[in-house]
Each structure stands twice: as C-alpha cells, then as structure tokens.
Image (tube, rainbow, N blue to C red; front, side, top):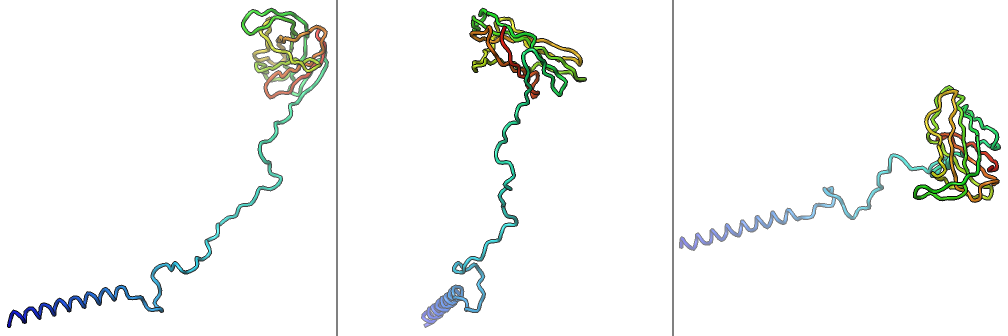
Length: 204
C-alpha cells in the first residue's frame, strides 16, 4: 500500500509541475490588452516625414563663370622692319637685318637651301634688369608659309640679362624657299609673358 501511495504522490507532483509550467508559458505569450502601449516599433504604422536638411542647394548665379576662361589676348605692337617698337616696360625691340642667305646642312636634321637670317636688337630703357633668355622669334611669309627654324647658318639667339641702359643683339635663321625679295612678318616676344613686337618687311 505504501508503494502505491508514493506513486500517486509523485504523479500528482509531476502533474502540478506541468500545469505551473504551462501557465507560465501561456502568460509570456499572451497578447497584451488593447489599452497597453506597445513597447516596440509598429511595422504597420505609416512612417513619419524624414527630418529636413539644415541647408538647401541653390544653382550658381548666372553671372558666375562657367568652365575654364579663355586666355587673355596677347598684346602686340606693330611696325615696319626699319622702325623700333618700344613697350610700356621701357624695352625697345628692333630688326637690325632681314637677310636672304643660303645654308648648308652640317648636322643631322638640318637642311641645305635658301633661308632668312633675322637680326634682333633689344634695348633695356628701364631701371630693372631684363632677362631675354626666353625670347621667341618667328617668321611667316605673306602667303602664310612658315619659316622653319634651323641651327644651320650660325644663329646666335638672344640670351642672358640686359642691364639697365644696355642692349643685346641676337640672330635667328629660318628655312624659307624662296627667301630673297619675299615679304615676311616677323614676331619677337623678347621675354615670357611680355608683349609681342610684330614687324613687316621684305627680305633683302
């Protein structure tokens, strides 16, 4: 009899424990009352408006520069081959000679044939030293044919620094066929970023 009683007591305890566990699980999954506030986000609720930015973008004013600007026009002064050109910098440029010569090729890349030799003089009338190491000279015939610079014919380009009140002379040779008696336009840029002297004349 005692054994049967112990079995009934143990079974009763197991049943009671199961009922308590079931009640706890049911309580944890029970849907909260309608008047209880939700503790998490409601996926079904419509999203509110997003916060606005603190600033707004506006297009640039119409007068603002768009893209790269065109380079400033090159300042030029023109004269005949026998006249000097004086600039605001007090530099004076002149052509001492515009001669037809014949050159012979002596090194690779040179060409034998008629050419124009241009002798350029630059005088410094300012109170500052004038560097002419970057001087550039070109020759173009009246019909648009370009004179081709050459190292034949012993050219001696402008170089160095001209002291105030002093002058230097340089020579340049350009292949041009024919050369003698031809009308040409000679440009002389005596220094980088400075105005350009433009001379017109005839090769003699």
